[in-house]
Length: 311
Image 1 (cartoon, helix red, strand yellow):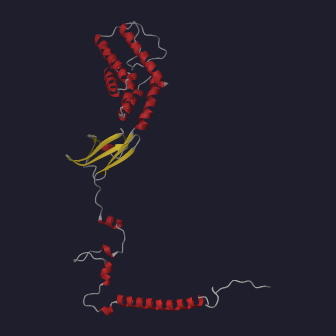
Image 2: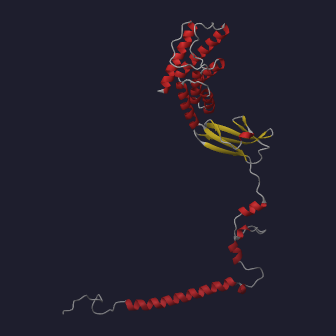
Image 3: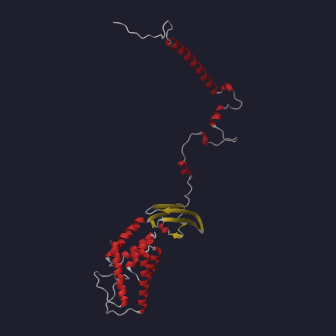
């Protein structure tokens, strides 16, 4: 509804400008017009005629405005933004500024669109329809903007940062700054040399922190605190002959030592004795149990007969 009202207001203001060029008196205005709008109502008939230079600039502004509207209706946002921007340089118009911000937002240039709309909303005595539409559009632009926080983790005083080829001020380091969604190239510059390049992709509304540079090397005390405590012999230095499995080293007797003094020999012998004893006991026990469980062989098969005893 607000967009429709704004379109009506635009057409009405444009008709007033055309009437001014033809010398016809302007129609009665229901609301006071903003003096900053390019499409303001014409001056009273008693006012002096505009100078030729002013009339020429007015004709230029009108031609740019008309082309901007045609591109806007066709969805050609880049051409529309170009025409409205050039018109504002000749003569500022609140309606043209809103159309410029709308075109910039459709192009994804959300940061510049936000600044265009903020400047428009700072105009005193802004027409209500334009103010309401600009406020609503600015809220949508701010919602879609991404934010980027750039940090230099090594030496911020020595290094500098470029984002998309443009210097990133040191005053903005560590601050979440609004940026346009999409692809961005970050470079860490040391002197005249780029020492690090980073490519990022930001979605609408995304908050991203980019850390550039190599963190300083930890001190020995920090390394000791971070190192896990381990009792494994694998952390020791390997012998000159190469890395061997610890288990194999423990099983091999020392050179020149007696085999009968090796404790692992007696442990193995004891295990063998225990195993033999266990097998003998199990065999003897299992034979007795099986004999008791075997049915008695006789003239009747099977050995157990089911019967009923009469009372």
